[in-house]
Image (cartoon, rainbow, N blue to C red):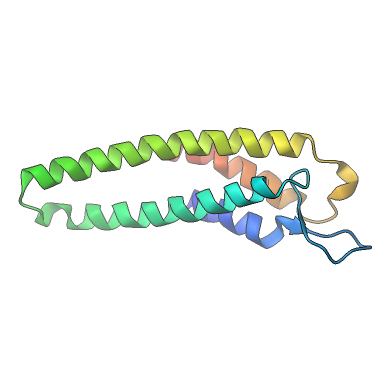
Length: 126
């Protein structure tokens, strides 16, 4: 759920434009990579969460212990990887937000703060 919130905040108000221009830019210090990282990690984490939820639903029906062991190890490995990636994302978004000029952000400051906050919460939820 946190990944979906990060994704929605960045897609909804993560890109803005100046009143004098129609060109969109990322509100995180005009760094497109910050928005792309947040959106990409949000989408992939959401898909991974759905996949492992489906694995958990069908887990009692898997009779082979070797397959069960590999699924549990895969779940553990993916959880560790996404914990690390969310930590990197939190640090990256926070750093870029700290360098963002206040006059460049007319709309979307609350969404940027929400994306940073929920990327922090995602570290512990994964």
